Length: 124
Image (cartoon, rainbow, N blue to C red; front, side):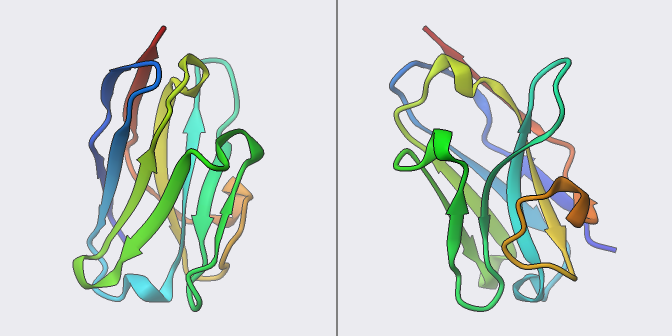
């Protein structure tokens, strides 16, 4: 059982930056596919970014390409999402997720373990 705890969300003005972090209880996080998803009220959870297990390849939804960067530090059991040039439409609860089976997946249903989420609010 992997426990994930996000932190780093908050309120920021449009154009600003935030870095959200996700610490995993699992000491072999490098064996897991990990990703970030976001959700707004009344909508389904959506893919934001993922980083592959073996080669560290990164994939992003089109809306955040060039602005967000996903990274992982396996020595700290932590994954990060650096968010730059934030826009009001980025406002959401951001969740990190992990899976033992898949790597680089964009599908929420492929992920087994989820954090509690961290709120990111971007004001205009």
